[in-house]
Amino acid sequence: MNDITHLRKMSGAGMMDCKHALEEADNDFEKAMEIIRKKGQAVAAKRSDREASEGCVLAAHKDGFAAIVALKCETDFVAKNSEFIALTQSILDAAMAQKPAALQELQDTPLSDGRSVDNHITDRIGVTGEKMELGFYEFVNGASAMSYIHPGNKLATVVAFNGTIEYQPARDVAMQIAAMNPVAVTPEEVSQKVVDTEMEIARDKARQAGKPENLLDRIAEGALQKFYKENTLLQQDFVKDDKITIRQYLQQQDKALTVMAFKRVTLNVE
Image (cartoon, rainbow, N blue to C red; front, side):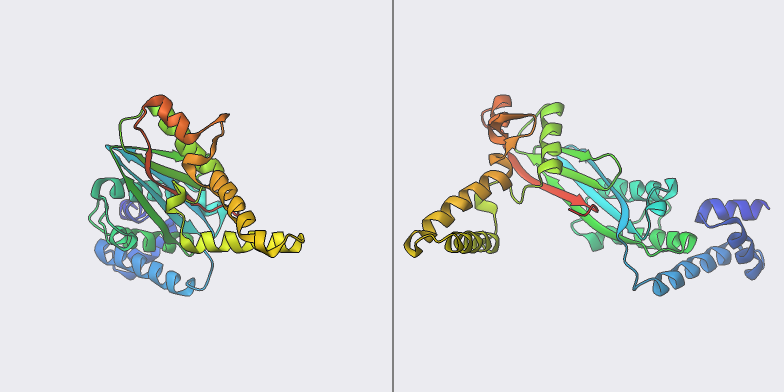
């Protein structure tokens, strides 16, 4: 019974799964752990065609670095499980400590027991029987940074600044990103593909409204400026005070203060 309890604590598997694994392994603890892991891998293979559309999104910041991780699963029931949330938190902790450059590097990063993030996810698949995957890893760097997790653990943002900023203004900007979903910091950072698409949509609307062909480009340019106002962070109206923009709000803190980068991850349907 002590071995079963210890195996259950180490693996997170169910009591009967641990009992059967120990029996199959002739009470060899290491072999029993391997059996449970292999079971997880088998479940993962079986579930590879299933959609992992639920999950847990967490974020953190420290010393100018901020990161978001999203561990995905199939059902909201599993997403709200305390052990699933704890695994997501441990992956985030590893990301904050090691600062990996890409998602695959984070998947290969060892957790506290020396085993990789991928191995821990596979083990958890064996426990729940659901497909799971590390869906997102995003990060920003700056002179200072802030993170925000929206209640429910389905949406998080991180933002980096070029200078020192107090907690509340930084949090306000992170919450603005969560609420208003900007596409870029400034108009200059909007991709050419998005610009071309918005211009063409505006031309089509004007054409359908019967506007003269020689005015279409001018009308489209006006629509593009409206798009920038609504969808680039520094030009957006501040949600807490729509008389000023985010750029103006930051300049109230420090004339030179601005946003260097941001990331936003959500599992919600928008």
